Image (cartoon, rainbow, N blue to C red; front, side, top):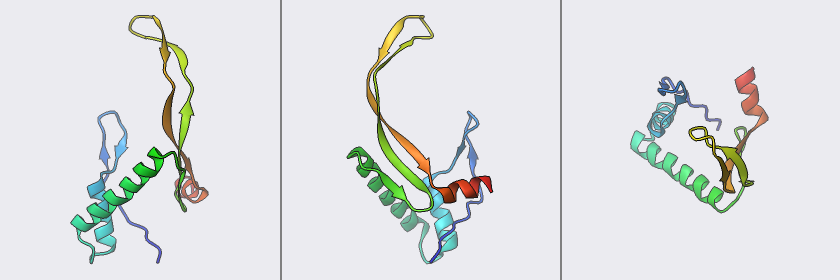
Length: 111
């Protein structure tokens, strides 16, 4: 079964970034599958995000077919300048999450 929710409203964040809340995703799931309540849909979205968070915390690569892949990357320590003081400072090494979109997602975005 192919699932393609339609989200009807997206909020504009003060910095101009479009945001989509878990509740809006849940409403889209409920609109596509009325047998699933909004509350149950919110719990399912939470479960999915918890699995993603846990797998990424372990350092696993997470691939969602036709959407993309999330992976943890190591950022090396680096020197930078504090813009407020002009002082040189060391930014410590850290881990970050990287996202690589799947071809299907790129196609949907670019047409």
